Image (cartoon, rainbow, N blue to C red; front, side, top):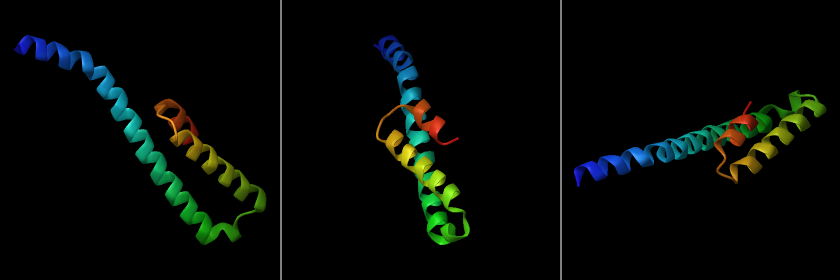
Length: 79
């Protein structure tokens, strides 16, 4: 029984790691969205219109990526 439990744990380790990476990526992205939106609200008038739009578009893209569970897609949008 113990060997079976060890094998099950090993088999699930990769999936657990993948889930953990997705959760970590989502948490990081959520924090980034929040801080960026806050900074734009406070200092958006000091940024050129074209730059502000580019930032808003990037935030929008990141929010869209957050709707899924693809950690790599989320990480790509945070760069």
